[in-house]
Length: 161
Image 1 (cartoon, one colour):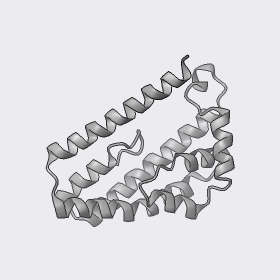
Image 2 (cartoon, helix red, strand yellow):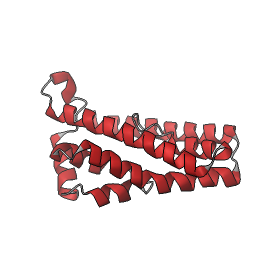
Image 3 (cartoon, rainbow, N blue to C red):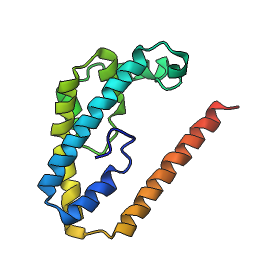
Image 4 (cartoon, rainbow, N blue to C red):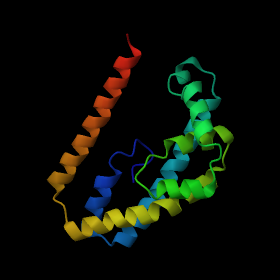
């Protein structure tokens, strides 16, 4: 749903859309949006890894992170990508490996689409069954954003002595 960005609002959005729309339609639309967003992210990550501009080095993953991801995930296979997208676990390490090895963008988008559909369907179905109030979903989104912010500050403090 918001996969072209940080994707932290995807779960609350799926729960919200599931309240008022057919979960199958939500899953298909969400899967398509995630596929397009993930393909965009992959292209941007490839560009970041390939550029030698000083201002881009800050945005590109460090060589250590890249080597760790390559060691942990030596192959970004289609099935691994589908399974990673079908779970709530982050797929950033696989995306990093896919960018580093030049994984085909169309195949990556297809794996993202196919993996997202069952996960998004379940979330939309939960939203349809429980009909969470909008204020609760907004509060959950705020808690998630707060957690991301705290984690970023914590990491920044570790780097700065």
